[in-house]
Image 1: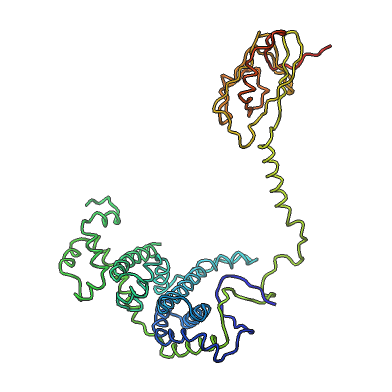
Image 2: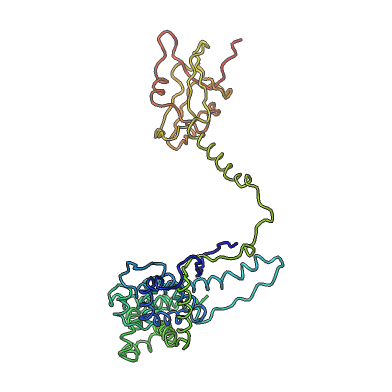
Length: 191
Length: 259
């Protein structure tokens, strides 16, 4: 007997689904293609965003399982762009969950503890976590550009193709993103 | 630049701030030059706020660059691909939910709560809503204004709705003259004696407020929220009485005891 709680994504094998075989492989052929062409790039982007092996593997799996959920021939303009954006969203959600845990869990633990304990020591996020949190706080369009350009080291033309925007627009977004990141990190240091 | 300005204001006060931002945030310009342009370096050596701004911007770009330099562990890709292939072969789909054993979910109460107490808040809310709607749909109270003439004879009572029914717009301003005849007439209300007043005038506004001067001292038993009759009824009030009986007036005294 199980109960569904929370909104965290998890991959659950379906017992009734069709067994691994020709039909399944045909169904996922387009995903195989994306993995072959862009899997390494997506994994690198996830690594630079998440910096933890377990999280990266989870995010990588979540991303492609989401793509698998789209079916045989999804109506996508660019499977590569969709895969990058999906992976980015999964990673950003993980960063947000991490951040929430850091800030909320001590209070939740104190609330649910009968014995009054000393407040748990506040764990300061590392510089890497601060940068990840700041990236997660950026508006979506700025975040996508800064992740693809600065972390994945894509050219602006490639960023534009993935996001479906003009390269010049991507360049402007990247400038805005850097200014915003400086503000966010400066505020974090002041706090 | 003055000393009383905060550092943030000083930053804004520098006329070249936007130029500094523009140069420092453009990675392609920085890459091609390899270092900061000479003009910018000179300005930064002269302007402390812009130097602080440049430091923060360069810190961000260097942090991003350092992050991008980190290499993926060499076997991570193989392990991730293997795990993914296993999951896809097994027909894995994202459910969007975590399933945990039921015994792991904390129970709020060891005993199951009976069903009906859970409905109590809804019942209370429904009764409040019903009462409130009744309050607005029909008059809260109907003051019976029984008109008596100067000889003490009673006439048909006039019902004045205490509040305006919902959906009807209250008149912007109603002036009700409670006297239409000789001062000796009386208006009897069901709410008891309120004294006699030969002439009284109520000025009631759309928001059901009334002016203090208009509310007669002797009419204090009138409901505060009274909205006086519709135009037809007002006309009826103003209309002189029939020829065969003296014009009546109203006051707030109770009906005299016939004995």
